[in-house]
Length: 291
Image 1 (cartoon, helix red, strand yellow):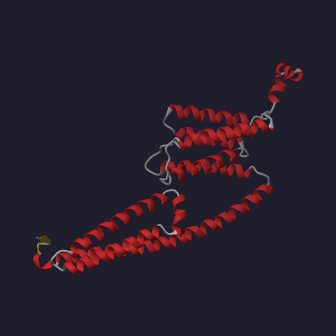
Image 2: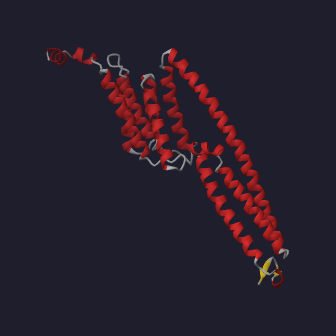
Image 3: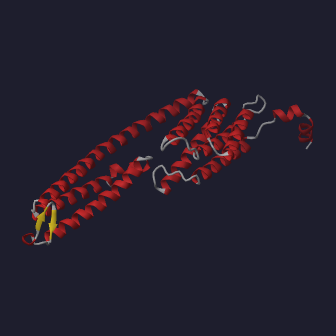
């Protein structure tokens, strides 16, 4: 009680007071949780899957906020200022100014609180998820660049032993990522071959149909349906499943699954319809079938 009164009556002691370890942990946890909620509610959909998107967003928020705790105060302040300069909303501008002020306060020689830098970074990351700059994709690139700057700043602020362990873990993850991307690329090439073959068979079916060769057209469409189904199976192959967690690529894979399934169904239905037609009763005039 006496020490608390003394600290209150002595401004210099109050200025040099620091948060306790538990208080810092609590502030950091609040920053991670708050940033994650705000980012998820921003509507960002890098993969198109609500569950995967929420998990990726929370992971990014946690890494950026925790990394900012060891980043230089000026790095956090600089990113906050840059983000503030890019927003158009007055509310977001106020958040950016508050983040920059917290970063500056954290760098004060008497405070130097990592929790304040984490809280400032949380505000910045929440802003970045609501950034709208230029045409499609520009906002994502700008936001990613500023977010990576925070993370790199945090890594630089770590002690050498921790940096070495982090570098080793990053290297192993990098090798794994390269292997997964190589597997996805190989599988995607196989899918591309099936899709191209299906397109060629469809074109040949149209040519045969215009020439009055109903049977050949049905065979070509049936073969096209098989190749389209092969392409769909290729996209659903276990080697392609990691693509569901990669932004943008996941959306293209989902669209590819829907399109190949629908196209295979149409081609198969068309082939079945042609097989039951009596070609002797049909005539082709100017590329059109006269029934």
